[in-house]
Amino acid sequence: MNNPAWATWQACGRGIMGGLAACAVMLTTALTAPAAMAQSADDYPQRPVRVIIPFSPGGSTDLVGRRLSEELGKKLDGSFFVENLAGADGAIGAGEAARARPDGYTLLYANASALTIAPALKDNLRYDPVESFAPVGETVTYPLIFVGNPEKPYKNFKEFVEYAKAHPGEVNVASSSTGAYMATAVLMLETGIDVQIIPYKGGGPAMIDLISGEVDAGFGSTGSTLPLIREGQLRALAIAGNERHSDLPDIATIAESGYPAFQAGSWNGLLAPAGTPPEIVAKLSDAMKQVLADPEIIKVLDAQGQTASAADPVAFAEHIKAESQRWKDVVSSGRVKLPQ
Image 1 (cartoon, rainbow, N blue to C red):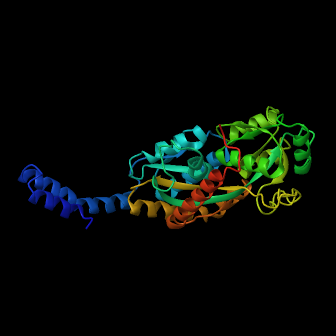
Image 2: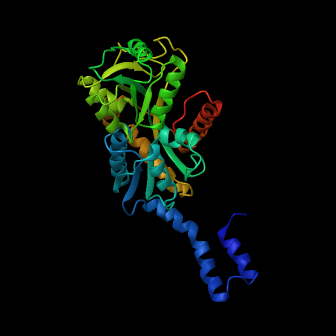
Image 3: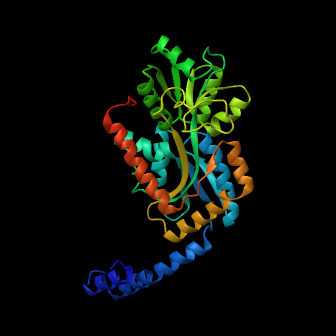
């Protein structure tokens, strides 16, 4: 029986609680704890809620996470503020969220890189993607887009592969996350090219260097790349998903370009630390579903090239578990070049 009042009563009976007065206080606390928890969910939030985004400002996860956090605050009549804790491919921010007090006042808005790929690559993380969090819900899904600097000589993906093969080890490819890194590593395996993978702390810094020509190409989220493609600051070379993107109907997928086994995409989601009261998790999940069903938010997501998901906590937990195992299998296969 997992009942705090019963456990306290048993301890008192064994004389280990230090006297009748102490027993009375502890028993009263144990009896009122469930009611207090339910009340906290009814009144939640009573103070500002910190939403940790484990990447630099300006990237796709940050831009969408900020807007969704703002709208979540409106739905719940509270204040949700974003804190960027970038570094270690999202592991610093995710670790901070995992260690936070599980009371609903610290949340994590993260993507597949931080939640499933980084844990498959690193042994010393201070969080477990399955055990450390109470998933609230998946929010969006999106394909990755392979882009290049428009001043470079290649105009499509086939020309990029030809150029990279003619210049082995000389082409620099930006990696704004572990997801982008692994997509590039698998791309090298599938195409036989040899490129230098340059790591960045987020999509914003990576896109800046792509525009300036400091790096030659790279995978980016739809949110990070589409506005720059529309402005002519980046050139779309290929879609990494399993179908062409509606905003770029003339850009072929990597699969269509001769590599049918290749596809790469990502997703974002909201999580709380493990142990957060289920009532609060459910309240957050219901509110987020309402946000993602708002026609105005759907327009915002469409502009970012993203699709609303709104998976419930159980479905999101199963998805994280399955994706974590998939990436563990990729890494353990030894078939891809891993980061040093």
